Image (cartoon, rainbow, N blue to C red; front, side, top):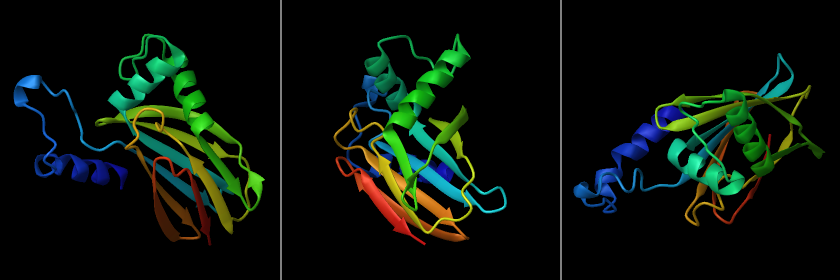
Length: 174
């Protein structure tokens, strides 16, 4: 789903009226600043499984500014250091509360898929979910136009919400 969404957004570039002069050599790689977070309750494993997709160029610029160092997520010289940067950043900017209890997410890893960094997390045991409170400020400090799209699946029911910076909180009931 995430891949289809990003391909769809890239196809819209010629129609947005925001294209730059072709001679500027892609000074703007994309006209939309967004992250996509997917949260699914895996009933058989009794845990939340979370993925976050963020445009690589935006994410690297944000990490360089925040952590004042060399950041190369595509070809890292030190993969463990990049894992730590990705994990620390996302876990500081994404909080989930399930049925009134904060969810502790464990970082699984990240991969590059097309133009995005997709990082993966899972929770400890959560038997059932009736209400999720999500705080998402991923890349909000990078662009005022940042958008967070959140998709949640619980018990086969899918709900989605869009947060426009500075909106940071979503509450979904199942």
